[in-house]
Amino acid sequence: MSESEEQLIERAKRDADAFGLLYERYVDRIYNYVFYRTGDVHEAEDLTARVFYRALGHMDEYRQRGAPFAAWLYRIAHNLVANWHRDRSRHRDIRLDDAVTLVEKRDGPERLAEQGEDARMLLGAMSHLPAERQQLLILKFVDEMSNAEIAQVMGRSEGAIKSLYHRTLIALRDDLGKRI
Image 1 (cartoon, rainbow, N blue to C red):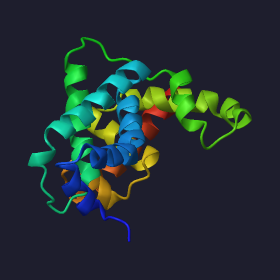
Image 2: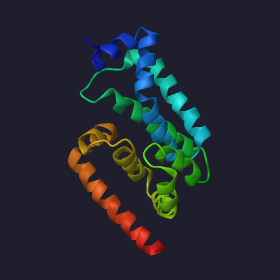
Image 3: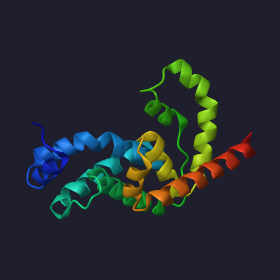
Image 4: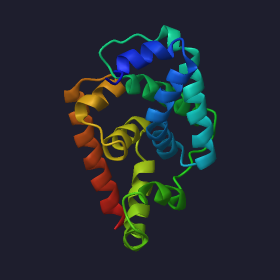
């Protein structure tokens, strides 16, 4: 019988190997989230490491409160990324060549070449959105989370997420319409 996530979390509070299993389970998702928010591979690697270092340091304080463990990690990541942006005077755009490496796992090189211009326009439009809306889109389309899961991560109601999602899509449509 395999260990439940709750059991693994409790074990990780006193066993570094158990925390390593949690790390392996969530590192790619957290890295992708951080990368899409920073647009820089090296910064994403550093911030992802800091997320897990902080989580490890506070495991004994973690309590199950109905939200998944991933929601706690995303909140740590969100706070670190917000601090990272605050510490910089300019906002960096996501570099297409870095973003493409994340998409390659689903699409071949020919398909990516066709999508290059569309991706460039979409990423440009996304970079003009507020951080909260960027977070929503990353959780929805990169991590493929449901609205209920996104609500837990962002600390909002599912209805609020649906409304924010709708407003975000309208803002993206309007921005892309200006670019075409």
